[in-house]
Amino acid sequence: MGPEGLDARLYRSLFRIRRVEEAIADVYTTDKIQSPVHLSIGQEAASVGVCEALGPGDVAFGTYRSHALYLAKGGDLKRMIAELYGKATGCAGGKGGSMHLIDPAAGVLGTSAVVGSTIPQAVGFAWGLRLQGKPGVVASFFGDGAVEEGAFHESMNFAALKRAPVLFVCENNFYAIHSTQAARQSSTDLLERSRAYGIPAARIEDSDASKVYEAARESVDAIRAGGSGPRLLECLGYRWREHVGPNEDFRAGYRSREEAEPWFRRDPVARAADRLAPEIRRAIEREVLAEIREAFEFAERSPFPDAEALYTDLYQEPRHGAPADLR
Image (tube, rainbow, N blue to C red; front, side, top):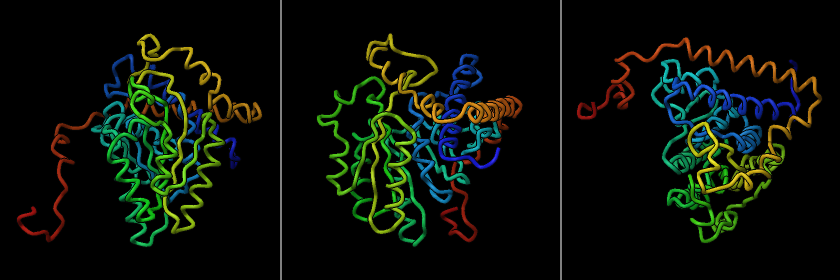
Protein backbone atom coordinates (compact mmCIF):
# COMPACT_ATOMS: atom_id res chain seq x y z
CA MET A 1 0.00 0.00 0.00
CA GLY A 2 1.02 3.57 -0.51
CA PRO A 3 1.22 6.24 2.19
CA GLU A 4 -1.83 6.20 4.47
CA GLY A 5 -3.83 9.11 5.77
CA LEU A 6 -4.49 9.69 9.46
CA ASP A 7 -7.75 7.73 9.59
CA ALA A 8 -6.13 4.72 7.93
CA ARG A 9 -3.10 4.84 10.24
CA LEU A 10 -5.31 5.01 13.31
CA TYR A 11 -7.44 2.12 12.11
CA ARG A 12 -4.41 -0.01 11.22
CA SER A 13 -2.97 0.47 14.70
CA LEU A 14 -6.29 -0.12 16.50
CA PHE A 15 -7.17 -3.19 14.44
CA ARG A 16 -3.66 -4.61 14.79
CA ILE A 17 -3.66 -4.30 18.58
CA ARG A 18 -7.18 -5.76 18.89
CA ARG A 19 -6.42 -8.79 16.70
CA VAL A 20 -3.04 -9.42 18.36
CA GLU A 21 -4.65 -9.47 21.78
CA GLU A 22 -7.52 -11.67 20.63
CA ALA A 23 -4.93 -14.09 19.26
CA ILE A 24 -3.07 -13.97 22.57
CA ALA A 25 -6.32 -14.79 24.40
CA ASP A 26 -6.89 -17.79 22.11
CA VAL A 27 -3.36 -19.14 22.54
CA TYR A 28 -3.37 -18.54 26.28
CA THR A 29 -5.71 -21.47 26.88
CA THR A 30 -3.06 -23.84 25.44
CA ASP A 31 -0.55 -22.86 28.15
CA LYS A 32 2.08 -21.96 25.54
CA ILE A 33 2.05 -18.48 27.07
CA GLN A 34 2.76 -18.83 30.77
CA SER A 35 3.36 -15.15 31.46
CA PRO A 36 0.37 -13.35 33.02
CA VAL A 37 -1.31 -11.19 30.37
CA HIS A 38 -3.18 -7.93 30.98
CA LEU A 39 -5.16 -7.22 27.82
CA SER A 40 -6.00 -3.75 26.54
CA ILE A 41 -9.08 -4.84 24.59
CA GLY A 42 -11.48 -1.90 24.72
CA GLN A 43 -8.81 0.57 25.84
CA GLU A 44 -6.72 0.78 22.65
CA ALA A 45 -7.64 4.39 21.79
CA ALA A 46 -5.38 5.96 24.43
CA SER A 47 -2.15 4.35 23.24
CA VAL A 48 -2.99 4.68 19.55
CA GLY A 49 -4.02 8.33 19.71
CA VAL A 50 -1.10 9.45 21.85
CA CYS A 51 1.55 7.51 19.94
CA GLU A 52 0.27 8.86 16.63
CA ALA A 53 1.02 12.35 17.99
CA LEU A 54 4.55 11.41 19.07
CA GLY A 55 7.50 11.64 16.72
CA PRO A 56 10.08 8.92 15.98
CA GLY A 57 12.54 10.57 18.37
CA ASP A 58 10.07 10.65 21.26
CA VAL A 59 9.91 7.88 23.86
CA ALA A 60 7.35 6.25 26.12
CA PHE A 61 7.20 4.38 29.42
CA GLY A 62 4.26 2.18 30.33
CA THR A 63 2.48 -0.20 32.67
CA TYR A 64 2.02 -3.95 32.85
CA ARG A 65 -1.00 -3.54 30.50
CA SER A 66 1.56 -2.81 27.85
CA HIS A 67 0.74 -4.52 24.56
CA ALA A 68 -1.17 -1.56 23.10
CA LEU A 69 1.53 0.98 23.95
CA TYR A 70 4.34 -1.27 22.68
CA LEU A 71 2.64 -1.87 19.33
CA ALA A 72 1.27 1.66 18.86
CA LYS A 73 4.76 3.11 19.39
CA GLY A 74 6.23 0.80 16.76
CA GLY A 75 7.56 -2.09 18.85
CA ASP A 76 8.56 -5.23 16.95
CA LEU A 77 5.55 -7.59 16.89
CA LYS A 78 7.54 -10.79 16.34
CA ARG A 79 9.80 -10.05 19.29
CA MET A 80 6.79 -9.18 21.46
CA ILE A 81 5.02 -12.48 20.81
CA ALA A 82 8.27 -14.37 21.29
CA GLU A 83 8.65 -12.63 24.65
CA LEU A 84 5.22 -13.80 25.73
CA TYR A 85 6.27 -17.34 24.78
CA GLY A 86 9.42 -16.94 26.90
CA LYS A 87 11.65 -17.42 23.87
CA ALA A 88 15.23 -16.23 23.43
CA THR A 89 14.19 -14.08 20.45
CA GLY A 90 11.84 -12.06 22.63
CA CYS A 91 12.30 -8.34 23.17
CA ALA A 92 13.65 -9.04 26.69
CA GLY A 93 15.31 -12.33 25.81
CA GLY A 94 12.36 -14.32 27.13
CA LYS A 95 12.97 -13.11 30.69
CA GLY A 96 10.39 -10.34 31.02
CA GLY A 97 7.14 -11.73 29.69
CA SER A 98 4.05 -9.70 28.89
CA MET A 99 4.50 -7.13 31.65
CA HIS A 100 8.09 -6.14 30.86
CA LEU A 101 8.27 -5.13 27.20
CA ILE A 102 10.98 -2.93 25.74
CA ASP A 103 12.12 -1.80 22.30
CA PRO A 104 14.55 1.14 22.57
CA ALA A 105 14.85 1.44 18.80
CA ALA A 106 11.12 2.19 18.64
CA GLY A 107 11.19 4.48 21.66
CA VAL A 108 9.57 1.99 24.05
CA LEU A 109 11.87 2.35 27.03
CA GLY A 110 10.19 -0.08 29.36
CA THR A 111 7.04 -1.28 31.06
CA SER A 112 6.73 -2.61 34.59
CA ALA A 113 4.55 -4.80 36.78
CA VAL A 114 4.95 -2.41 39.72
CA VAL A 115 2.16 0.18 39.78
CA GLY A 116 3.42 3.71 39.15
CA SER A 117 7.08 2.71 38.98
CA THR A 118 7.74 4.00 35.45
CA ILE A 119 6.31 7.47 36.17
CA PRO A 120 9.47 8.77 37.91
CA GLN A 121 11.59 6.99 35.30
CA ALA A 122 9.81 8.91 32.56
CA VAL A 123 10.23 12.22 34.40
CA GLY A 124 13.91 11.50 35.00
CA PHE A 125 14.46 10.74 31.33
CA ALA A 126 12.62 13.92 30.35
CA TRP A 127 14.66 16.00 32.80
CA GLY A 128 17.81 14.45 31.35
CA LEU A 129 16.77 15.54 27.86
CA ARG A 130 16.21 19.09 29.06
CA LEU A 131 19.54 19.23 30.92
CA GLN A 132 21.36 18.07 27.80
CA GLY A 133 19.47 20.42 25.51
CA LYS A 134 18.18 17.50 23.47
CA PRO A 135 14.84 17.50 21.65
CA GLY A 136 12.19 14.97 22.44
CA VAL A 137 9.01 14.40 24.40
CA VAL A 138 8.51 11.61 26.92
CA ALA A 139 5.08 10.01 27.33
CA SER A 140 4.33 8.40 30.69
CA PHE A 141 1.38 6.00 30.65
CA PHE A 142 -0.30 4.82 33.87
CA GLY A 143 -3.70 3.76 35.18
CA ASP A 144 -6.08 5.45 37.58
CA GLY A 145 -4.76 3.25 40.39
CA ALA A 146 -1.30 4.78 40.04
CA VAL A 147 -2.71 8.20 40.91
CA GLU A 148 -2.81 7.04 44.53
CA GLU A 149 0.91 6.28 44.59
CA GLY A 150 3.31 8.75 46.14
CA ALA A 151 5.54 8.38 43.08
CA PHE A 152 2.81 9.98 40.96
CA HIS A 153 2.59 13.11 43.11
CA GLU A 154 6.34 13.46 43.57
CA SER A 155 6.86 13.07 39.84
CA MET A 156 4.17 15.59 38.93
CA ASN A 157 5.65 18.15 41.30
CA PHE A 158 9.22 17.61 40.09
CA ALA A 159 8.21 17.71 36.42
CA ALA A 160 6.35 20.98 36.95
CA LEU A 161 9.24 22.54 38.87
CA LYS A 162 11.79 21.58 36.22
CA ARG A 163 9.48 22.13 33.24
CA ALA A 164 10.34 18.64 32.06
CA PRO A 165 9.11 17.72 28.55
CA VAL A 166 6.78 14.95 29.67
CA LEU A 167 3.21 14.10 28.72
CA PHE A 168 1.43 12.27 31.54
CA VAL A 169 -1.25 9.92 30.17
CA CYS A 170 -3.73 8.40 32.61
CA GLU A 171 -5.64 5.48 31.08
CA ASN A 172 -8.64 5.65 33.40
CA ASN A 173 -10.76 2.48 33.24
CA PHE A 174 -12.35 3.23 36.65
CA TYR A 175 -10.98 0.14 38.39
CA ALA A 176 -7.79 -0.77 40.19
CA ILE A 177 -8.14 -4.53 39.80
CA HIS A 178 -11.60 -4.91 41.42
CA SER A 179 -11.89 -1.61 43.34
CA THR A 180 -13.78 1.29 41.80
CA GLN A 181 -12.13 4.66 41.57
CA ALA A 182 -14.88 6.21 43.70
CA ALA A 183 -14.22 3.70 46.50
CA ARG A 184 -10.51 4.55 46.53
CA GLN A 185 -10.38 8.30 45.97
CA SER A 186 -12.21 11.01 47.89
CA SER A 187 -12.15 13.10 44.72
CA THR A 188 -12.09 11.46 41.30
CA ASP A 189 -11.29 14.70 39.47
CA LEU A 190 -7.79 13.99 38.18
CA LEU A 191 -7.67 17.23 36.20
CA GLU A 192 -8.05 19.16 39.44
CA ARG A 193 -5.05 17.34 40.91
CA SER A 194 -2.95 18.04 37.85
CA ARG A 195 -3.77 21.72 37.85
CA ALA A 196 -2.87 21.92 41.54
CA TYR A 197 0.72 21.33 40.38
CA GLY A 198 0.35 23.96 37.67
CA ILE A 199 0.14 21.34 34.92
CA PRO A 200 -2.47 21.94 32.20
CA ALA A 201 -4.77 18.95 31.77
CA ALA A 202 -7.53 17.67 29.49
CA ARG A 203 -9.95 14.75 29.55
CA ILE A 204 -11.06 12.64 26.54
CA GLU A 205 -14.22 10.88 27.60
CA ASP A 206 -15.43 8.52 24.90
CA SER A 207 -12.48 6.30 23.88
CA ASP A 208 -12.19 7.79 20.39
CA ALA A 209 -8.66 7.51 18.97
CA SER A 210 -9.14 10.56 16.74
CA LYS A 211 -10.09 12.74 19.70
CA VAL A 212 -7.20 11.39 21.73
CA TYR A 213 -4.85 12.17 18.85
CA GLU A 214 -6.07 15.76 18.56
CA ALA A 215 -5.66 16.39 22.28
CA ALA A 216 -2.27 14.66 22.35
CA ARG A 217 -1.01 16.57 19.32
CA GLU A 218 -1.93 19.88 20.94
CA SER A 219 -0.16 18.84 24.16
CA VAL A 220 2.92 17.48 22.41
CA ASP A 221 3.22 20.60 20.25
CA ALA A 222 3.06 22.79 23.36
CA ILE A 223 5.70 20.72 25.15
CA ARG A 224 7.93 20.61 22.08
CA ALA A 225 7.78 24.38 21.72
CA GLY A 226 10.03 24.45 24.78
CA GLY A 227 10.00 25.80 28.29
CA SER A 228 6.32 25.42 29.08
CA GLY A 229 6.67 22.15 30.95
CA PRO A 230 4.50 19.04 31.22
CA ARG A 231 0.91 18.32 30.28
CA LEU A 232 -1.57 15.66 31.39
CA LEU A 233 -4.24 13.78 29.45
CA GLU A 234 -6.88 11.65 31.12
CA CYS A 235 -8.21 9.12 28.62
CA LEU A 236 -11.37 7.39 29.78
CA GLY A 237 -11.87 3.83 28.62
CA TYR A 238 -13.14 0.45 29.73
CA ARG A 239 -11.40 -2.89 29.74
CA TRP A 240 -13.56 -5.62 28.28
CA ARG A 241 -11.71 -8.58 29.75
CA GLU A 242 -10.71 -9.51 33.29
CA HIS A 243 -7.95 -7.59 35.07
CA VAL A 244 -5.42 -10.30 34.24
CA GLY A 245 -6.19 -13.13 31.85
CA PRO A 246 -8.08 -13.76 28.62
CA ASN A 247 -11.67 -14.11 29.86
CA GLU A 248 -14.62 -11.95 30.79
CA ASP A 249 -15.31 -11.46 34.50
CA PHE A 250 -18.77 -9.95 34.75
CA ARG A 251 -19.87 -12.77 37.06
CA ALA A 252 -17.19 -11.88 39.60
CA GLY A 253 -19.57 -9.44 41.25
CA TYR A 254 -17.60 -6.22 41.19
CA ARG A 255 -18.99 -4.90 37.90
CA SER A 256 -21.83 -5.78 35.55
CA ARG A 257 -22.30 -6.36 31.85
CA GLU A 258 -24.92 -3.59 31.92
CA GLU A 259 -22.20 -1.16 33.01
CA ALA A 260 -20.00 -2.30 30.13
CA GLU A 261 -22.64 -2.21 27.38
CA PRO A 262 -22.28 1.52 26.55
CA TRP A 263 -18.52 1.00 26.14
CA PHE A 264 -19.11 -1.99 23.84
CA ARG A 265 -21.24 0.27 21.66
CA ARG A 266 -18.42 2.84 21.59
CA ASP A 267 -15.89 0.26 20.38
CA PRO A 268 -12.87 2.35 19.26
CA VAL A 269 -11.94 -0.16 16.55
CA ALA A 270 -15.41 -0.23 14.96
CA ARG A 271 -15.69 3.55 15.06
CA ALA A 272 -12.36 3.95 13.30
CA ALA A 273 -13.40 1.38 10.70
CA ASP A 274 -16.53 3.38 9.89
CA ARG A 275 -14.34 6.30 8.76
CA LEU A 276 -12.73 4.29 5.96
CA ALA A 277 -13.86 3.08 2.56
CA PRO A 278 -14.49 -0.69 2.65
CA GLU A 279 -11.72 -1.52 0.17
CA ILE A 280 -9.12 0.40 2.20
CA ARG A 281 -10.26 -1.26 5.41
CA ARG A 282 -10.11 -4.75 3.88
CA ALA A 283 -6.62 -4.17 2.50
CA ILE A 284 -5.38 -3.07 5.93
CA GLU A 285 -6.98 -6.07 7.58
CA ARG A 286 -5.43 -8.56 5.14
CA GLU A 287 -1.96 -7.16 5.72
CA VAL A 288 -2.33 -7.06 9.49
CA LEU A 289 -3.70 -10.61 9.79
CA ALA A 290 -0.84 -11.96 7.68
CA GLU A 291 1.67 -10.13 9.89
CA ILE A 292 0.10 -11.58 13.03
CA ARG A 293 0.25 -15.13 11.66
CA GLU A 294 3.93 -14.67 10.87
CA ALA A 295 4.61 -13.34 14.36
CA PHE A 296 3.06 -16.33 16.11
CA GLU A 297 4.83 -18.73 13.74
CA PHE A 298 8.10 -16.97 14.56
CA ALA A 299 7.44 -17.38 18.29
CA GLU A 300 6.57 -21.06 17.86
CA ARG A 301 9.79 -21.73 15.92
CA SER A 302 12.07 -19.74 18.20
CA PRO A 303 14.22 -21.52 20.81
CA PHE A 304 13.97 -21.11 24.54
CA PRO A 305 16.96 -19.38 26.19
CA ASP A 306 19.97 -21.53 27.03
CA ALA A 307 20.55 -22.39 30.68
CA GLU A 308 23.50 -19.98 30.70
CA ALA A 309 21.06 -17.10 30.24
CA LEU A 310 20.13 -17.52 33.91
CA TYR A 311 23.45 -15.91 34.78
CA THR A 312 23.30 -12.94 32.41
CA ASP A 313 21.60 -9.54 32.77
CA LEU A 314 21.85 -9.78 36.56
CA TYR A 315 24.31 -6.94 37.16
CA GLN A 316 25.65 -4.03 35.18
CA GLU A 317 28.91 -5.15 33.59
CA PRO A 318 31.85 -3.05 34.93
CA ARG A 319 33.13 -0.39 32.58
CA HIS A 320 36.70 -0.63 31.32
CA GLY A 321 38.99 1.05 33.82
CA ALA A 322 36.51 0.95 36.71
CA PRO A 323 38.08 0.85 40.19
CA ALA A 324 38.82 -2.64 41.43
CA ASP A 325 36.29 -2.42 44.25
CA LEU A 326 33.54 -1.78 41.69
CA ARG A 327 34.39 -4.84 39.62
